[in-house]
Length: 196
Image (tube, rainbow, N blue to C red; front, side, top):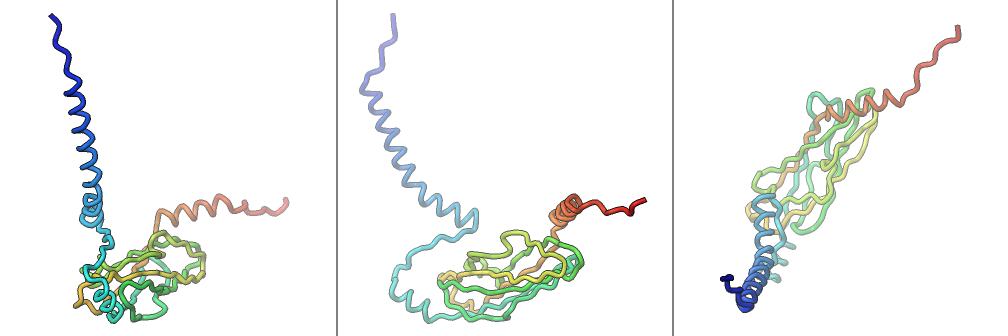
């Protein structure tokens, strides 16, 4: 005796349930994405203020002092410093600060910059949109270069934070410097020899 075939009605119910589950999952993706960005990756997403007019006026009136600092690790023969020590900024607006680096050695060297923001609780509100710290920097022997950093301070920065310090330390990138030296040796012509 053969098993009874499942009714077409049961198949339709299953398809409707799958469609509803997929629909609900799609709506759950937005808050899940926000949670993943903020909690796991430390990326703050913009949120609209509940009272846009009041928040906009408060943000425009608020001013902060940004302090700039720079230094190099003892193994890196470079000079590195900010062009200006302080800047007055308003949250929500983009600004640019300039640092200057100089290779004081007689060979090309690759350096990598590590940024830090103080106080630590302000770091999540200090957003760099362009920075020399995003990539390794190569300076030829004796070369000087201006290095810009563009940033925006999040308007949601706690009101009691009045001063933020942005500091960079440059370290010698040994791996990339070694590759640079090997490439330079390979591309340089063989030394000429005197005729016998």
